[in-house]
Length: 312
Ligand SMILES: CSC[C@H]1O[C@H](OP(=O)(O)O)[C@H](O)[C@@H]1O
Ligand SMILES: Nc1ncnc2[nH]cnc12
Image (cartoon, rainbow, N blue to C red; front, side, top):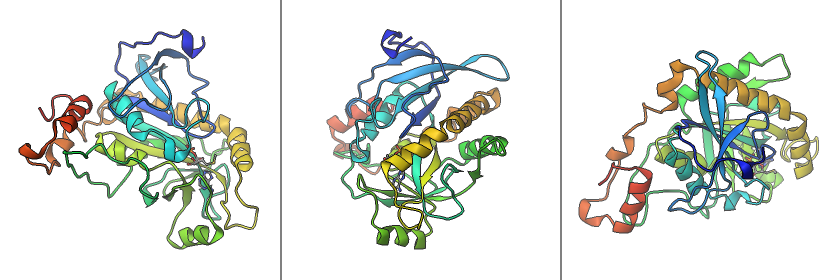
């Protein structure tokens, strides 16, 4: 069935979403049961949100999983054009509280070879402030902790799943720092070498503001990176889109197996609270700095859409 023939509403509550990046514009081995066209106060997301039902390996119960293509179904959004606020808001509005985000990234370390996977634990922001990066502005100030940009609980599950595939063509690195650059041009050689000195493990153009917005929206977020090149610091040849896509295509089966293993595990009953992000629930109610009289009605309307009942 093509996505245009699918129902445009869904009755269940998907707690888990996969955001697919370069080369992962759909979840091919899953069967979508609905395709949602969502509008948010921050505009439309980069793609319709498709819902697939993933059978829980413990109960057999179908677990709904949402999928969104970060750059659009035709990869029409450049990294700085990705409507990240609309993406995160749209997912939250249908009940998603746990996001597994995939990304194709350059490796900044010899040990991380093209086609290796990295489950990062840190981020360095090298975007240039041109991307809308917060929900909290225009008369509603709220500060959110971001010391650890990825969710420890979800990260633990993802690492376990990745390791379970090792030896079957999957190599996983348990930690790493993602440098998020602005793009869309790739780095200069001097920048690439500087990022290595900073301790960068991999480099992409998309973990931010996505991870920051997920934190603001009380969602448990973990990125999974697949290395597609050695950027330009290495003597094996400078990064090109051809190189990125070549490795992505060659390793697509492993990427899909990785996603399948993570969804299998996360749809177990024992992770119900984790994927509902119970540990993050309500956090935003306590970070607001704006006094009652200073909150704009425009901002409050948006807050009410994103956090129904929190601030009214
Ligand atoms: C096509 S190479 C650069 C492009 O690839 C990565 O995309 P994503 O993270 O969405 O997989 C990188 O961040 C750049 O957007
Ligand atoms: N070398 C690189 N730099 C930035 N983003 C990338 N995505 C894939 N490879 C990349």
